[in-house]
Every structure is written in structure tokens, then in C-alpha cells.
Image (tube, rainbow, N blue to C red; front, side):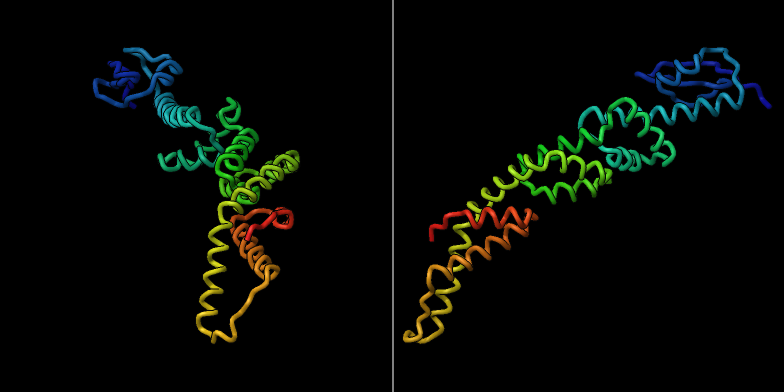
Length: 235
């Protein structure tokens, strides 16, 4: 076997170009350079060279993941998808995710808390929709349900306010829709048969339209009914 000698090391930005037996071999990152205490004229074995390559590969992906995680709250799934797009091997991804958990750069419990606070208060999502989104992000379902259980009263309070918000926002357009429909019905019948809708009937139809709309936004059915039953309709 030919002797492997590091004949030259060139600093390149924050990396190092390694020359073996007078030929350029590979650019390694700073972490790898320090880890293996490399220097010119060092004689290395094939086994050590393979370990250098393996460590450098993992360290590069790990640095990418760390920089990505420091810019935003991330989940294990976020890191997995990010590194997969970078063509990182699955075994390396699993190793890096465990490292990031140990470094507190991945904290699914904290992520759930922040995600709920943002989506229910800012985006006015329903509890159900937020839970579904978190499950799609492959966050442990038990962690999600534990958070909901421990914060149920406050979450229901905010969801109730969100239901009222969308009710007010949609009310006028639904009233207009109902009136237009009834006017068209009366236009196609004889004047003698003009349909006179009582207030009770209109309110029921209005409530049903609102209920269907709010259900389409995945709000809790019981909370919807409580809000609708308590609401004062100005028809």
C-alpha cells in the first residue's frame, strides 16, 4: 500500500484544502481539521483517512442543521426534511437530530407551545386545525394532546373569541345571501302566492348557514352552538 502523506494544507475561507502525496484530495471544514490535528508531512493510514471523510461529512450536515435550527423553531420532522433535501443519509440525519435534541435546538414541547400561541391568536385557527397541522409535522400525538389537556380552558376561551370574530365577519354576507335567495324565489311565483317568511324561520336559516360556515373552519361544534345560541341577531 502506498504511503499516505499530507504534503500540503491550504486555508480556504473557513475550510482547509488537503493535499495527499502532492495531489489535491479534499476540502475539509474547520471542525474536522481540529478533530484530527492535521498538519503537513503527517503520515496517515487508509483507516484514518476514511474516518476523516466520515467525520467531515457528518460535521458538514450537522453545521447546516444547527444554522437552520438557530433561525427558527424547528421540529425533528423539519430537520429530517431539510437534510433529506441536502441528500444526507438517513442514519446521519437520525444522529444529527439526536445531537440537536441534546443541544436543546430541537424541543417539540416548546414548539407545540409556540405554534399553538401563534396559530390560535394570530391566524385564528381552530384547536382541531392546529392539532392536525402538528400531526402532519410528525410531532408526537401524545405531546400535542397533553398540551391541549393542560391548557384546555384557555384554548377554549380563545377559540370562542375566534368563533365570534368569524361570525361577525361572515354575518352580513350570509344575511345578504339568504335575502337574495328568498327574493328570487318570490320572483318566480305569482304575486298572490308571495311567501312571507317569519323572523323565526329566517333566524333558523341564518344560524344553520353560520353553523356550517364555522364548522368548515374546524371549530369545536359545542363552542359553535354556545356562541350561536347566545348571539343577538339583528336581521
